[in-house]
Length: 147
Image (cartoon, rainbow, N blue to C red; front, side, top):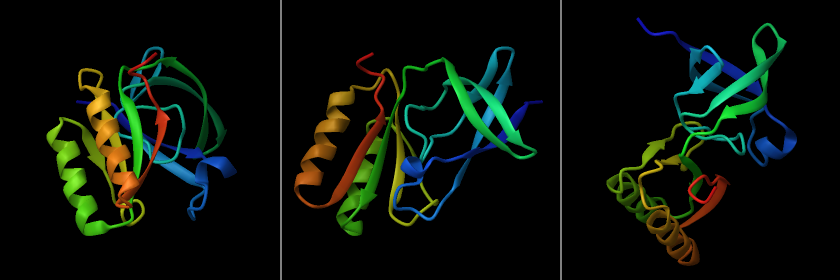
């Protein structure tokens, strides 16, 4: 039996950016010291898969992050496809590099988890090249490979 739970976080204006969202719901496993993130965040900066955080409850179903208690070795990258057909090939290449991908929150928008054991520069260089080709836009909200 697992102790998975979904927590909903209030987003700042900066975190929601141009998107029509005000909250983000994420899956966690409760641990003694806090909550371990079990999916890839789409909007919350400085947060990566497998981080352990402490939270503050704002109301019955809404939280904010107090502190990252134990950062993982994972990095998070956000990718928005401008050219969907070519971009999906790039997403497939990233998956082939042993990265995790989540989508479905906003059309053509992906959250990428780069595990600590994956060579970050390979993923980064691919994204920079495809961004210069006009295929996608990328943002790097949590880069742990250089910490």
